[in-house]
Length: 132
Image (cartoon, rainbow, N blue to C red; front, side, top):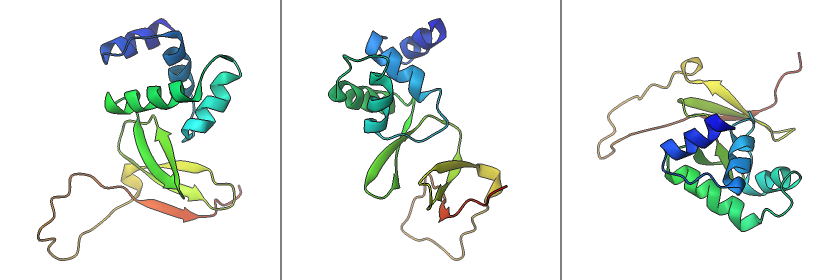
């Protein structure tokens, strides 16, 4: 908990009890939860937590560069706490989003891209995860 308090402070965030509870969840999951999923999970241990507080806190974390806001599910914004560059695979059967290491995918540009200044990109793949 002390490490999380320090982490938030280092990013200019006042570590309130609500923000700490949200941070503890978002940084401990390997999933890509929506704000409503964060609210559902965190309110089970913090019953007074409001949906608005979750939305505001997640947006604050995005603004401070702690997490990324992604549109990976149809019509739903999800939050990703992995800060290193990576791609995503979405299992169409379960809806689960998996992180794919950056070096596993190679993207080549064929031809000139006149008029574009590409600063970032990611590959989002959809399909079915094979059962082991």
